[in-house]
Image 1: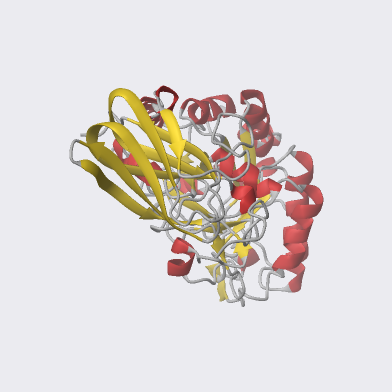
Image 2: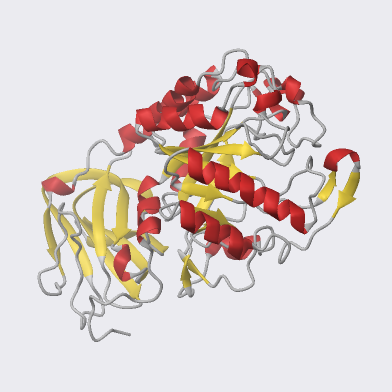
Length: 461
């Protein structure tokens, strides 16, 4: 199927805020609250603010760990399910203002926002919809409280690149001393449209994350692994935070009605909060590399959690492994072989050619039903990785591609994958060749390829 004008978008396309989000690719999550001091993952809500007292909180060390680890930003759990607020909210006593830390004058959100700005990193927040501390949870009054707190975070801490909402909701808790179980209808109780509208009003450039978007969807697991393929489009009808089919979220839908790309969240440790007994269970640089290929390499973004220690910093082992992972990435993508190659294509639509220029892309002619792009080298090169990226303002057009290498006996196919999207990393066994060809096996319309890069990934056997 071809459009009358190939330069018109096909299907759903990303908004400017989503396009900017795609470019971030890899960023961090920070889990830090009273749980850090009780050695729990989920607090009940009855924890005293007095236990929150990091001995040497250092926002600069945390942000520096993320920056040196190659992260483009950080999302902070400003409030987890226990209801404890890391900023001095005027709407509750259950916050840092009643802790001994900084003599009750501290603000974790402010210090991290300022440190991110100084280091050139993006900043985002997560505000848990579920609150096991608040006495009004489960009633309409709680929604007013929740949005008042959200307004504080959206108004007072500078520009945010992402606002994160999850699906954990309802259950037993402290709830102001009632110690009971409360259930809510997660499809109606939170009145998400009003909450999302508040984000749009106060942070129009921020992407909203949840199972249902509206900008970014959960990938359906907490292992950091996107489906293969993982389409950036999906029909969000009937999806709500905490109420969506993980299998559907994992792969998306080809020709879905909305541009709703996946974010892959995973912790660098088994838990999301710091636990000393997990100091020897930090993900290795090699494991993080595999997660990168299974997330960013499938068109999604990767969100890796760094648990903050009771001291108030990123643990030395977490930092070391994160920095070593960044070094691996630098090795992998050190030398793009494309500048050494002569590029030819099966056809070209108008004057649109693949180049380093901003906004440039290659598009075959509309009548070209079996398009290809080829890189030829004056001398043989060794490669084992192809990096493809579509020109997303025209939609996710490519259904599948195949990779061929030139041999003495002719062309040999070394890989075939479905979906390209924002970025598709295609590894295969190392080969030495004089030419590489990318065949577009199927496309909803003439393809629009923004990037073709070839690498020898020396970090793999």
